[in-house]
Length: 205
Image 1 (cartoon, rainbow, N blue to C red):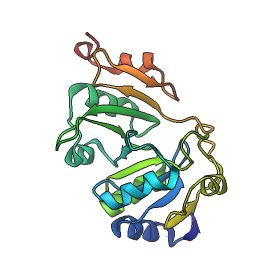
Image 2: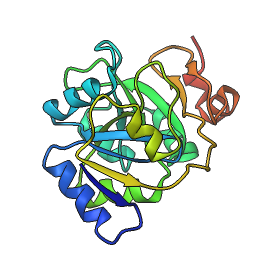
Image 3: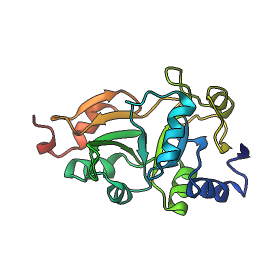
Image 4: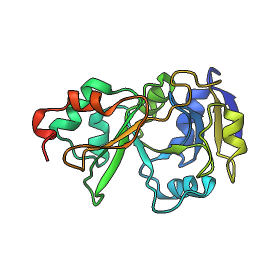
């Protein structure tokens, strides 16, 4: 495992190469430390599950640099999703949206973390992601805690310091697959704020 500070001049190129080579990296997001791999790399996605003993039925989150990139990767756009993107992204809100390309739903977030956005833009990758902790244990806001809780190390770990933007609060999760939209996990954004941003037609059963 290669360990670098996020501020190291080599960090962006190392992370980009890790993704493009089908590797797994651990790094800070604006919510908690996460594990990332290319969305379109099945072998790397399987490693994410193994590293944190994640149950196979629990899906990985998609992180994308833009809504347009997410749509190209398989998310189905809609007026409701576009309204959320304008109001809350980049930011700590995950939206479960209908998928295309053989996938029924995808949990999508566009992160607010500057390094992570630069990485996805520089690599051209949409990422599969999950929090860097063993399933069933609290998420980590320090890299050392994230690495200590994994069954095996990532290929690259970037130390972004202690996460303070949200104080370790995970993203809110809301489902647009339900009508009206349903709150699946409370986080930094409230359901009332989300509903206020949606077109009226998206809120009716």
